[in-house]
Amino acid sequence: MIPTQLSASFATFAHNLRALKERVDSILRTFAEEQDGQYTSRVKSIDSIFEKAVLGYYSKLNEIEDLFAATVILPTAPIGAALTEFTQSLSGHFTVLEVRSNRTRRPSEFIYDDLHYILKLKDSALLLNKSLLTFSFELQVKSYLQHGWAKATHNTIYKAINESWRASRVAAQTRAAVEMIEAALTTGEGLLPDEADQRYMPIDERVAILGLLLEWWQGEFPGNRRRLGLFALNAIKLVNCSMEDLKIILASERGTYLQGLPSLSIQQAILILIIENYFDILVQRVQKGEIKYLLITREMEDISEKCREVPENIRFRLADD
Image (cartoon, rainbow, N blue to C red):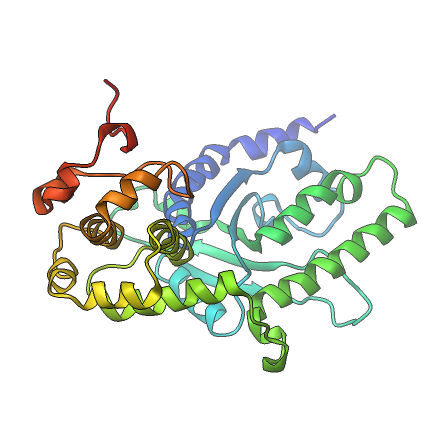
């Protein structure tokens, strides 16, 4: 049973919390998506507010910092220079009242201890409801791993019906594992010494062909360079074109011409060169190798007569008939 007086008190500014949520959501959702992350938020329920109020940590309702709380989930949690940059980016829209992390010093203790900010909106000419400036709110910043652990243990630990030592032990052990894995992923290849490096042909081939393409292409590179390497390798292997042969083709007059055309992507330019130099063998082997269909666009046909000759049955269909 929620006390009527508490419900009435909360109702006086609940609409402002919803307005705060709408305002902050519009900023932080874009902020998260720009960093390949996700965003969630919530206004605290009256049941949860009551549970916190009776604990006796706060003197009044609007002192509770997480009446509105938001979470930004990133591929890896920011540390070092990345954390400084992240905080500076936040300060463009918010007043940073406090930054909290690593609240335990015990090396044997593993607790819910992710990066937290306590923020307030900054005033601006676009903010019509100035009462929103009085509210502080909580922002949690997690990696996908940390977020997954928090979701997996939330009901069994944080809101368990029956608390147990064993459940707490499992939560601490798995939290320790998440922390270790997070540190490894953040460190990246630096986790292993140079002498641990191994030769592995699929990776070595992709690195080699991407090196050629980086020297040749003057336009924009796709974000997924590994996939670009796979595409280029599959294309030259399909027609028995060696890396040296590709290097000659890229350095040719035709290759030099294509790499300067803003209307083409690097994939389109490579495919044009392969089609023009290996047309017959390519047409015969498409659908028998890794490449099943060829994406031939109008821009490619405008530039290359050979592209216009590619049979319809081996083309990727750009529109339904």
